[in-house]
Length: 226
Ligand code: NI
Ligand code: MN
Image 1 (spheres, helix red, strand yellow):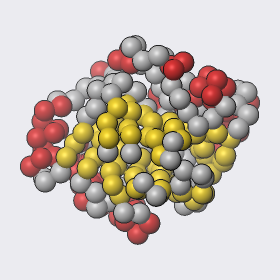
Image 2 (tube, protein in one colour; image 1 turned 60 degrees about the vertical axis):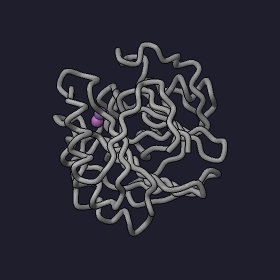
Image 3 (cartoon, helix red, strand yellow; image 1 turned 90 degrees about the vertical axis):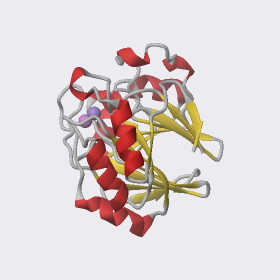
Image 4 (spheres, helix red, strand yellow; image 1 turned 135 degrees about the horizontal axis):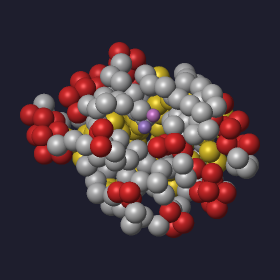
């Protein structure tokens, strides 16, 4: 699978020639200033929760591309009010088959409110199961025992975990999460964007290596084969 990183928790994965974009936040991310937001392709946009650092560019990209936005019911209702026409509402525990594969919504231990501070429902993680492989996007979350359930549903090829600390797990918690989800190839996200979440890349990668795991930290704008 092709994985392209757009900074913070925003990335896209290409499956069966469909572009699945997660948590679009580019315009307001100083570190992503070289990304041309109008050039990003999306057939689907999956949004984990309502915080602006996960949704800020969702309306404009959805309107330009006509992508189907998949998120919690409440986030979808808010997006409809902002003029997004194509949404698919879900909630924790539910799964739905799309043409690229199946998406299952799982627990994320965090909070959620919309950018205008209206109610944002519970945050989600997504497990994506496809013919090209399965992966897990944890969203913003603490380390939680619920992660142990994920191998019951999917044999993960890779997982995207937050590592920035302060608002989410840190790299050490992500190592323990990687044990629970039975997946050793981790892409780290949700770090460096703000002062609170600046991390030591080398130390994080060394700690993963010492645990027999790989922490991938693609550059913003970089596409990797995973
Ligand atoms: Ni958040
Ligand atoms: Mn966040």
